[in-house]
Image 1 (cartoon, rainbow, N blue to C red):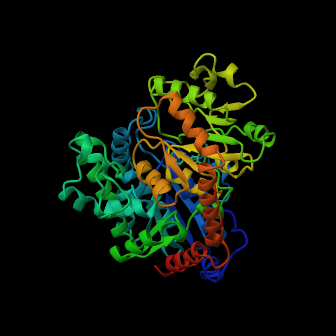
Image 2: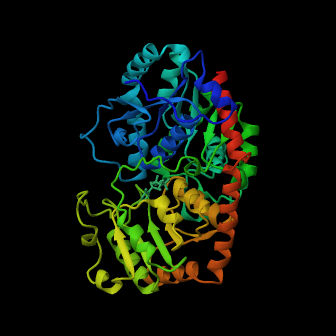
Length: 477
Ligand code: UDP
């Protein structure tokens, strides 16, 4: 159960991490068990390991990461008491309820596992716990056992600022949304957000959403620091605002995948055969299409998407994961082509590839990829910007609308396709993104951000500097 020795140690603070009285210092991590939360937490694990910490990852049985792919870390299972009993969440309301249920279900078991780990490592050897912002109960447990905590919030700084402002926005009447005309109202306290860009799930789910966000804010305020997977060149004003509004330090250490690219936390098998197909395509010619791990679409939307892609004439790589289509509960091993409309395969033969799950980081880095049709999850957004790939945004829930808003109106590296999906509009949007004119400008902006991301994560860059500060902070707690 002892973690393997740490790899080469980087930086001054790192030397201290490995050299605490001749013993390693430990950092304990607890990700929220969703793909978009596991990936950044495992990337953070890689960053901490490279800086000399021994890393222990607590995880639920639900969506457990594959420990065998990470022999450099120790994994400790925390029974969640609900595996097998419940199907994976499909709507945003389900996700919110699931997060609440996981917190309650894991609390006692986590306390026991944490106490055992503390007894084994010795209390002094443990620097801190880093928990996902949505795991307030775990932050409270750690505090009761005198373990310092930091919180990783896996969304943007702007999004967390909206969490902080949520009670005020409710008081001012922006939320809950009472009628659709309200959706386009600008939120003057948080430009460029409109009401539709805020996290919301309608009147019925309003209380649940308020509770979810208030608990994330409480977790951060109880902790000794907030870690964000963003970078200064992307969100300097938003980060400055958070630093004014929060009493705890904020560490903007992203994009994390640039520090820890091999941290494979994929819950689904990544079909790498698409990389060989990309090798045979012309530079920047391919549209990559993926809606992440949770977003879903109706059967009609899938058909319109498929025929829009086919009609655009653009080469494509499309991720159609099991569960993408709402009305179809596909078995995980069901061939994806069975989900697509009849005739689609023949119409797009040799021009496109459909896979159930892709090695997304490598796909976005591939020279053949010239555009990304995305659901605007925060990881997908930062992975795309870090590779200079412009985006067609089709947000559906959570922080995705806010991310799409920033992509279009602040970073100008893409645009949103809203409303009902219809094949003609899909075709036109794809052509616009991939074309020289409009698409070229967005590509140029995305390339600027790629350069900025490389600078931030390079030697003495803002994210690299924030990591050094974070490590020093962890060792001082
Ligand atoms: N991802 C992947 N293969 C795919 C699609 C997505 O590995 O075919 C990864 C992607 O690189 C990202 C994560 O899954 O790190 C999705 O996170 P995001 O925040 O974009 O969206 P979510 O799934 O949380 O909605």
